[in-house]
Amino acid sequence: MIKLTAKAMVVALTFGIAGLAHADNPITIKFSHVVAEHTPKGQGALLFKKLAEERLPGKVKVEVYPNSSLFGDGKEMEALLLGDVQIIAPSLAKFEHYSKPIQIFDLPFLFDDMAALDRFQKGETGQELLTSMEDKGITGLGYWHNGLKQLSANKKLIDPKDARGLKFRVQASAVLDEQFKALRAIPRKMSFSEVYQGLQTGVVNGAENPYSNIYSQKMNEVQKYITESNHGVLDYMVITNTKFWNGLPDDVRTTLSEVMDEVTVEVNKHAAELNERDKQSIIDSGTTEVLYLTPEQREKWRDAMRPVWKKFEDEIGAERIKAAEAANKQ
Image 1: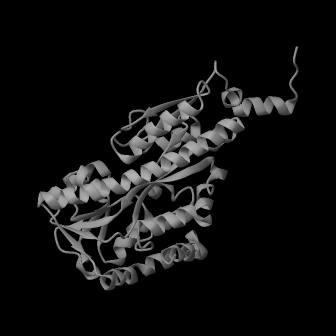
Image 2 (image 1 turned 135 degrees about the vertical axis):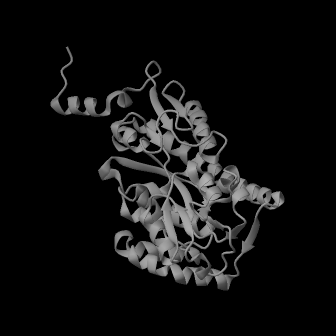
Image 3 (image 1 turned 90 degrees about the vertical axis):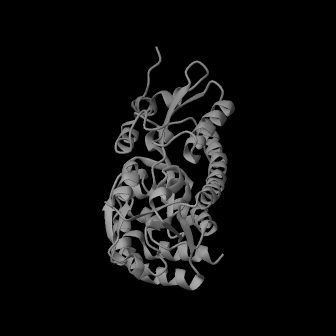
């Protein structure tokens, strides 16, 4: 009889099936998300499944559950922490209760463009944020883009004061709340599925979304104007259960990391193309006028938002904000 030492028994119990992967006993990875399969995130999950199973034949089986078919928006994080699902990709705005520094991505007008955001996320500070929740059982694997956010409303938003008194839909984020309060506007938390009706009925007057969200949800049909503000980012962090990830055999974990890096490049390329295409579709539809800010006008918005940066500086870290600003100048 083979006798296990106490330490070996703990390791076996902790790592479970992940540490015993072989051709007859593949590791099952459940990848759950809340969007449609044709979106950049949806396509990314399918590509991850394809490449992971090709590179690790018989060792890994990836099951993809789109459209909240396994867990909805409010339950997926709990499911990950319980080990009921192994990979999810929530919006960055969902992490403020797990890691305050990740709120940096909600700070308005911090990044000049997507290239600056990419430099920051790939740099030392951005990569550190991926591991900032490991003490809570969450490991970040990569950043997937959805796009830079634009302001939409039924009045022209050129100057910061134009937003005063308007009600804007926001995600459940303290930073985004303060963003609109800084403009003397009124933030209204509302689930994404309710935004079209909210805009249509006047429950809210405006919103902030990438072009792809605006077009896919037909918000342009109920918004006369879109200001191309590029004021914030709507990105996802692909995350996994830390215990599960650390319990994988080294070769499996290394290969999955490489696959995730490849998929991230494709997802982000797809997101950029989709936003450009949907922007043009909005313009072609004739429903909505797209407004463009001059550099001077955009700087005026940034100045109006700097108090928000200051308000969250202690939680996020002044050095992290400086690193993000530095990414604009490279």
